[in-house]
Image 1: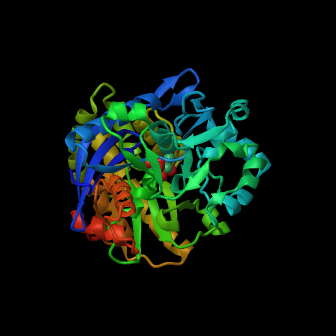
Image 2 (image 1 turned 180 degrees about the vertical axis):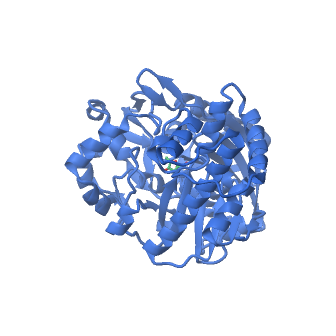
Image 3 (image 1 turned 90 degrees about the horizontal axis):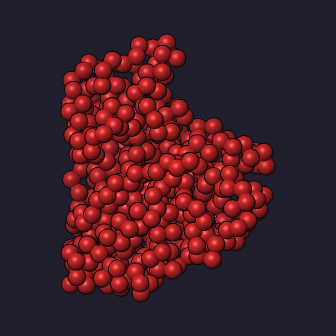
Length: 473
Ligand code: LRH
C-alpha cells in the first residue's frame, strides 16, 4: 500500500462521513468509504448528540477504510461542528453531550452576562453572540463543573477515545469563547471570572500535530494501528482552508447546515462595529482569523422537509428537495424575503409554520405551497449571504471581488445564482466536500505530501475540483 493516502472523519450536524484521500502529483483524489446519519436524541433533560453511536460509526468507518486500503492509510483526522463538548472525570464521560440547538442556553447567557457584560466579552474573545457558544453552555452545567476535571470538544473527545491524547485543537477551541483571539491561548482569567475551572481546559495544539496512534483495543477493532493527526477540527476551519481561491480578494460561504460567511484575515477585528454586526473572529489554519457571520443555512430547507415528510428517508427527502428546487426555480422572482437569522428558526420543529408566522407578523404575504416556501428560503438565504459579504468587507476594510461557495450548498444552483445576483459578484461553487478535503490536506501537509508554502492547500483543491461559475444577472 502506498503511504500517500489519508482518512478524514467529517461529522456534520446532520450526517457524518469517512473519506479516503490519495495525494498524487499535487492532486487530491477522494473516495467515500462510509456515510451515516447523525440524528440527535431528545431525552427528558433535553436534546443530545448520540455520541456513542457516532463513535461506533467512526470505528466502523475506519475499519472499512482499512479493508479498502490495507496498510495504506498514513493517518486519520477528525473534524466536526463546533462548540459542543463532553465533561469528563478521570477519563469517564459525565453525562451525554448536549446538542447546541437545545433550549437550555438562555439561562447560561444571562448568567455569563451578569458577570461579564457583552461588550467586555467581545473585546476579550471576539466571538459573535450565539447563545450556544460553549461558555454559555458551561454556565448551565451547575455542580457538574465542580465534578469534572476535563472538557473535551467533540472531535477532541473522539480523538481521545481513539488514542488517549487529551488536547484541545485550536481552531475549534476558538469557538468556546474562552480563547484569546490575539494570542491563541486560553483566557484563564476570563474562565475564572465565569466560574469555569481552568483544569477543564486541556493543552492547546495546532492543526498538523501528531496526536499518537490508536490504543491497542481500538486498533484491534479497526484492524490496524493508525496514526491520528489533529486537523483544523472545527469543520468550518477545514472548509475555509480548502476554499479553492486563486486570488486574494475572496469572500467565502461555507454552506451546509449553517452558512458561514466571511473573510480570512491576518488579525482579528474586535471593534464595536464588528460586535454590533455580530461578526466572529474564529481561529483558522496557520493562525489566520476567520472573520465571519453565522447565517442560518440549509437547516431551513432540511428542517422544512422533515416537517413536510416526517416519515421519509434521507434519500427520499433529498430527491423531493431536488424536485421542489426545480419547481421553485420556475416561479417568478419578486417574492418577499424574510430574516433567516431570526432566532425563532434555531430550534428543531415546524419550520414552514415558523416561516409563515414570520411573514404574518411582518405584514407580508405568506408563501403558498411548498415550492414557494422553498423559493423564499433560497432567496432569503442568498440575501443574507450577500449582506454578510458586504458587511464583512466594510468592517475589515478589505475589497471583495469574488465569492466562493463550498459545502453542500454549492450544489444548489438556485442558491448560488441568487447569491451572485443579490451580491453583484461572481460566485464560484465547489467543492462540495471542502471540509473533508481541508481535513485530508492538513494531514497530507503534516506528512510532507503537500508543500508548506502559503496557499499550497488551496492550490491542490483548485486543481482537484470542478468549480462552477455563476455570474450576476
Ligand atoms: C458548522 C458549525 C458552525 C458553528 C456551528 C455550531 O457545522 O461548526 O461553524 O457555528 O456548526
